[in-house]
Image (cartoon, rainbow, N blue to C red):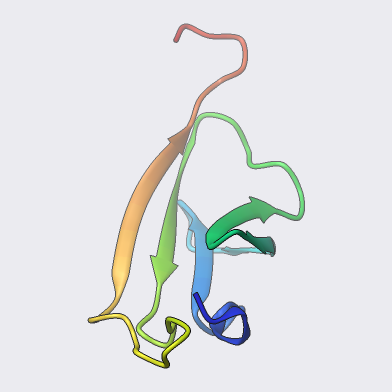
Length: 79
């Protein structure tokens, strides 16, 4: 992954009410770790979006946008 293509323009997380989540990025050994600057609210749905501006080291862009919803569990359970 081209580290210069990892930024807020190409990666976003939004809460279930559409508000953006501020993110931190760590790229190590070609593994990208994305963490929220503050904790996610538990029991809510979020959407991560990876845009086609993300490139590999050869400069090739992704083949389009990727979106995935995820749910943050309540730490009290049940799991």
